[in-house]
Amino acid sequence: MSAAIVDFRPDHAAAWAALNRAWLAEGGFEVEAKDLKAIDDPHGAFLAGGGRIFIAERDGAAVGCCALIRIDGGFEVSKMTVTPVARGLGLARSLLEACEAAAREVGAKRLYLETNSALKPAIALYESAGFIRLPPRPTPYARADVFMEKRL
Image (cartoon, rainbow, N blue to C red):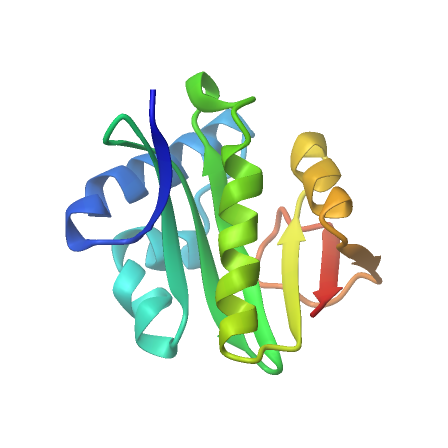
């Protein structure tokens, strides 16, 4: 079984949409307006603005994803998920490491993210990677109640 983290390609669009809809449903979250833009137009939501999208492939199938949105001083980590059958293989950590490496390549000073307190494994991953919690702030996501940052 081989696994790799690769850059998003147009042929990943259906898998990207399915992965994102699946984690939202699994968490019991609504698909919000900002989610729809990201799901329906990954190029416009991420790539056109200088961001990146990474796909975790296992034996050629997309089993995870994560995106970077360019923000002031760095990037926001967004839309991180790994399918249940591929969890425990270190793919989420590999996706996060790919995001950090990409941010460092262009001289970004920070990574930022918003998540939900119910997503405990994700929060544990972020904390183990050096993210610290920030005070609450305005957000377009109704579900976001945890805000984190990593200085690079």
